[in-house]
Length: 216
Image (tube, rainbow, N blue to C red; front, side, top):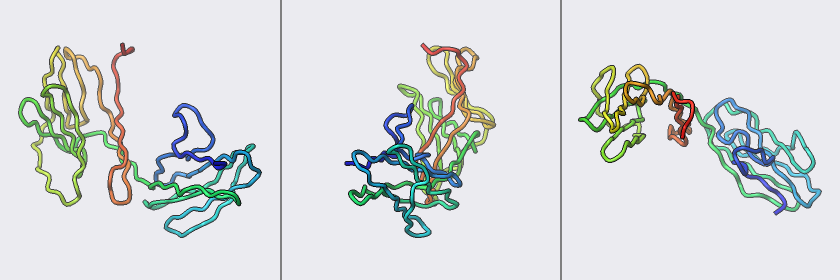
């Protein structure tokens, strides 16, 4: 294979030169895809399929045998496909969703269900369940848009007691935090969800603030 393209790259800490930038494409972000041509003087072109139709693009930059193509920025949530082609070879179609990134830094509501469980609503279709039976377990669940969600009770703060003097507290004005002997150990500051055109969450991330200087 002379045409090489790997959307996610080879390793996260080094640019391989033939990836997609960015890997997760949000509304309004310019998308650049790159490829490498080995053992050939053939010059690739890019074919892209999206809402506006099918387009063939030429590279805007070349460094040795590395070629860069710009798909531009997308102003609507949609599915996009693209592939590279020379006179000698055609790659498979590569696909990605243009997504909307949603940021949440506080619960909509919190409900403590006994001494070992908290159900907290992050947004209209995402529930965080926190259980402390054998171990501390947190589960995110996305419901369908027409699903019936039981309305939780409202309170400013709920606490689950953990072994060894630890406790987990959920705050109505924020998210959750882990404490030991009344000292904050770590705190959740933000949940991030990447949603496709149908509202389905394709990726999530959690931002934490650590109180300690070192982790052993």
